[in-house]
Length: 53
Length: 298
Image 1 (cartoon, rainbow over the protein chains, first blue to last red):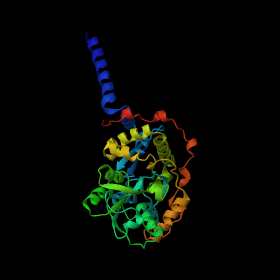
Image 2: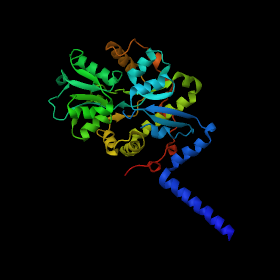
Image 3: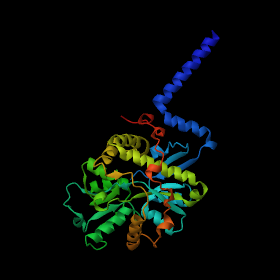
Image 4: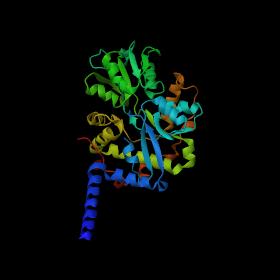
């Protein structure tokens, strides 16, 4: 019984997480976020702009 | 427009757009090395270099994309009708200022025959509407804004009076070129790719307008759609290599009208070694995010 509850909870969390990324965040942004967690492997550069062509 | 793609390069580097609201702050951030790369006005970049700031222009932001706007019902039908009028410019270090002086010469008008006022671009349309100016010359979307709200009309698109007009250029600190040349190459390639994608189709431009309106410019989507389609070549995002002939012309004019304190050689302020033929760049568009990956207001 406990195993079934644990598996059910894990599947439920996975489904909710995937739906949240799909509906609210976007996969590109999620990818950027996770790449940010391993910052030492990723170079970063700020690029300034004014909102005029 | 370029930010969308450069956020997501295949190499995995992260180019984060940082929005500024005025040119003075951009300039100070660059001088103080609080930022290493920025889109800035072309004559401003030349003057910074003339002042000894170690920067290089490595690419252009776009071509054309500026218009001279007058009141919708004003009795102004050509450039000569602007004599004695007040016209707003974005900055004395803007190429729009240089263009106004160039046009005065072309029309045989003495310098000073049009009163030029420095006004921040977002305030141009409201200044025209209030009657405090008779016209303005500015980069998009602020020319289209007066057209869309019915207060102004375009007297000239720059593409019709100075073809391949240059306004903003991509400038990087020389230290960055020395410390991480590959990163600069990646940035330039990303901008080239995004520009090619933008100029490929009307559909791409409409997608870019929606994404940019929501995530970068914070302007109505319809306004940016208008800018990118009326006419389709109002702003162009290809042919972005910095060419000596273009910059020599701007530099000489800027020096003549007193914008530059001294002449600056092309090689002093431009590093065009990052420009690659478009066919040599890996066009793996699968690495680009789809419009569905962004929160876009419907």
